[in-house]
Picture (tube, rainbow, N blue to C red):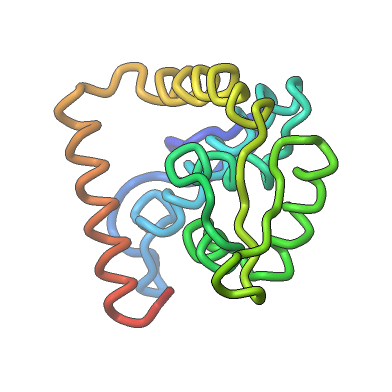
Length: 168
Protein backbone atom coordinates (compact mmCIF):
# COMPACT_ATOMS: atom_id res chain seq x y z
CA UNK A 1 0.00 0.00 0.00
CA UNK A 2 1.20 3.49 -0.81
CA UNK A 3 1.30 5.74 2.22
CA UNK A 4 1.69 9.46 2.80
CA UNK A 5 4.37 9.96 5.42
CA UNK A 6 4.37 12.59 8.14
CA UNK A 7 7.32 13.72 10.17
CA UNK A 8 8.98 10.95 12.17
CA UNK A 9 7.62 8.29 9.81
CA UNK A 10 4.02 8.17 11.00
CA UNK A 11 1.63 7.19 8.24
CA UNK A 12 -1.19 9.59 7.41
CA UNK A 13 -2.95 7.84 4.58
CA UNK A 14 -3.41 4.62 2.73
CA UNK A 15 -3.69 3.64 -0.90
CA UNK A 16 -5.58 5.85 -3.31
CA UNK A 17 -8.54 4.12 -4.83
CA UNK A 18 -12.15 3.20 -4.56
CA UNK A 19 -14.26 3.52 -1.43
CA UNK A 20 -13.75 0.95 1.30
CA UNK A 21 -16.30 -1.77 2.03
CA UNK A 22 -18.10 0.68 4.33
CA UNK A 23 -18.48 3.14 1.44
CA UNK A 24 -15.89 5.54 2.86
CA UNK A 25 -12.94 6.87 0.94
CA UNK A 26 -9.41 6.37 2.21
CA UNK A 27 -7.70 9.22 3.99
CA UNK A 28 -5.85 10.01 0.75
CA UNK A 29 -9.22 10.60 -0.91
CA UNK A 30 -10.43 12.96 1.83
CA UNK A 31 -9.66 16.59 1.07
CA UNK A 32 -10.34 17.57 4.68
CA UNK A 33 -8.00 14.91 6.03
CA UNK A 34 -5.23 15.87 3.62
CA UNK A 35 -5.61 19.59 4.34
CA UNK A 36 -5.37 18.89 8.08
CA UNK A 37 -2.29 16.68 7.61
CA UNK A 38 -0.64 19.33 5.43
CA UNK A 39 -1.53 22.06 7.93
CA UNK A 40 0.01 20.09 10.78
CA UNK A 41 3.18 19.49 8.75
CA UNK A 42 3.42 23.20 7.90
CA UNK A 43 2.86 24.14 11.54
CA UNK A 44 5.54 21.75 12.82
CA UNK A 45 8.10 22.97 10.28
CA UNK A 46 7.35 26.62 11.02
CA UNK A 47 7.33 26.09 14.78
CA UNK A 48 10.80 24.54 14.66
CA UNK A 49 12.09 27.70 13.00
CA UNK A 50 10.26 30.51 14.81
CA UNK A 51 10.62 29.23 18.37
CA UNK A 52 14.38 29.69 17.99
CA UNK A 53 13.58 33.42 17.84
CA UNK A 54 11.38 33.43 20.94
CA UNK A 55 8.06 33.47 19.07
CA UNK A 56 5.41 30.86 19.73
CA UNK A 57 3.08 29.51 17.05
CA UNK A 58 0.17 31.29 18.75
CA UNK A 59 2.01 34.60 18.60
CA UNK A 60 2.97 34.03 14.95
CA UNK A 61 -0.60 34.30 13.68
CA UNK A 62 -1.15 37.61 15.46
CA UNK A 63 2.14 39.02 14.22
CA UNK A 64 1.29 37.91 10.69
CA UNK A 65 -1.95 39.92 10.75
CA UNK A 66 -0.45 42.93 12.54
CA UNK A 67 2.36 43.19 9.99
CA UNK A 68 -0.35 43.83 7.42
CA UNK A 69 -2.83 45.80 9.57
CA UNK A 70 -1.23 47.39 12.61
CA UNK A 71 -3.57 49.09 15.09
CA UNK A 72 -6.51 46.71 14.96
CA UNK A 73 -8.67 46.40 18.03
CA UNK A 74 -8.71 43.10 19.93
CA UNK A 75 -12.05 41.97 18.48
CA UNK A 76 -10.93 42.65 14.89
CA UNK A 77 -7.65 40.88 15.52
CA UNK A 78 -9.43 37.87 17.03
CA UNK A 79 -11.67 37.60 14.00
CA UNK A 80 -8.87 37.86 11.46
CA UNK A 81 -6.73 35.29 13.26
CA UNK A 82 -9.71 33.00 13.89
CA UNK A 83 -9.26 32.81 17.65
CA UNK A 84 -11.70 33.39 20.46
CA UNK A 85 -11.30 36.65 22.35
CA UNK A 86 -10.14 34.96 25.59
CA UNK A 87 -7.43 33.11 23.63
CA UNK A 88 -6.45 36.39 21.99
CA UNK A 89 -6.08 38.07 25.39
CA UNK A 90 -3.73 35.31 26.57
CA UNK A 91 -1.62 35.56 23.40
CA UNK A 92 -1.52 39.35 23.56
CA UNK A 93 -0.45 39.24 27.22
CA UNK A 94 2.53 37.08 26.29
CA UNK A 95 3.32 39.29 23.28
CA UNK A 96 3.20 42.40 25.43
CA UNK A 97 5.49 40.77 27.99
CA UNK A 98 7.90 39.89 25.14
CA UNK A 99 7.72 43.54 23.99
CA UNK A 100 6.32 42.61 20.57
CA UNK A 101 3.14 44.68 20.91
CA UNK A 102 1.68 47.52 22.92
CA UNK A 103 -1.96 48.11 23.75
CA UNK A 104 -3.65 51.48 23.52
CA UNK A 105 -7.18 52.31 24.59
CA UNK A 106 -9.27 53.93 21.85
CA UNK A 107 -9.83 57.65 22.28
CA UNK A 108 -13.26 57.45 20.60
CA UNK A 109 -14.53 54.30 22.36
CA UNK A 110 -12.95 53.52 25.73
CA UNK A 111 -14.21 49.92 25.53
CA UNK A 112 -11.88 49.19 22.60
CA UNK A 113 -8.21 48.44 22.92
CA UNK A 114 -6.03 48.76 19.82
CA UNK A 115 -2.95 46.63 19.29
CA UNK A 116 0.22 48.13 17.84
CA UNK A 117 3.53 46.52 17.02
CA UNK A 118 6.57 47.73 18.89
CA UNK A 119 9.81 48.35 16.98
CA UNK A 120 10.87 44.84 18.05
CA UNK A 121 7.60 43.39 16.74
CA UNK A 122 8.10 45.15 13.39
CA UNK A 123 11.73 43.94 13.17
CA UNK A 124 10.59 40.34 13.67
CA UNK A 125 8.94 40.52 10.25
CA UNK A 126 12.34 40.54 8.56
CA UNK A 127 13.45 37.61 10.69
CA UNK A 128 10.36 35.39 10.60
CA UNK A 129 8.84 35.87 7.13
CA UNK A 130 11.90 34.39 5.40
CA UNK A 131 11.48 31.33 7.62
CA UNK A 132 7.85 30.99 6.55
CA UNK A 133 8.89 31.36 2.90
CA UNK A 134 11.46 28.61 3.45
CA UNK A 135 8.75 26.28 4.78
CA UNK A 136 6.59 27.03 1.75
CA UNK A 137 9.51 26.40 -0.61
CA UNK A 138 10.31 23.08 1.03
CA UNK A 139 6.66 22.04 0.88
CA UNK A 140 6.44 23.05 -2.78
CA UNK A 141 9.49 21.12 -3.97
CA UNK A 142 8.48 19.13 -7.03
CA UNK A 143 5.16 20.99 -7.35
CA UNK A 144 4.85 23.13 -10.47
CA UNK A 145 4.02 26.82 -10.18
CA UNK A 146 0.81 26.10 -12.09
CA UNK A 147 -0.22 23.35 -9.65
CA UNK A 148 0.67 25.53 -6.67
CA UNK A 149 -1.44 28.40 -8.02
CA UNK A 150 -4.32 26.00 -8.72
CA UNK A 151 -4.03 24.58 -5.19
CA UNK A 152 -4.22 28.02 -3.58
CA UNK A 153 -7.17 28.96 -5.78
CA UNK A 154 -8.98 25.69 -4.93
CA UNK A 155 -8.33 26.04 -1.20
CA UNK A 156 -9.52 29.65 -1.22
CA UNK A 157 -12.71 28.57 -2.99
CA UNK A 158 -13.26 25.75 -0.48
CA UNK A 159 -12.78 28.15 2.44
CA UNK A 160 -15.25 30.58 0.88
CA UNK A 161 -17.73 27.77 0.19
CA UNK A 162 -17.60 26.55 3.78
CA UNK A 163 -17.87 30.07 5.17
CA UNK A 164 -20.91 30.74 2.97
CA UNK A 165 -22.54 27.52 4.17
CA UNK A 166 -22.22 28.61 7.79
CA UNK A 167 -19.43 26.13 8.58
CA UNK A 168 -16.98 28.65 10.02
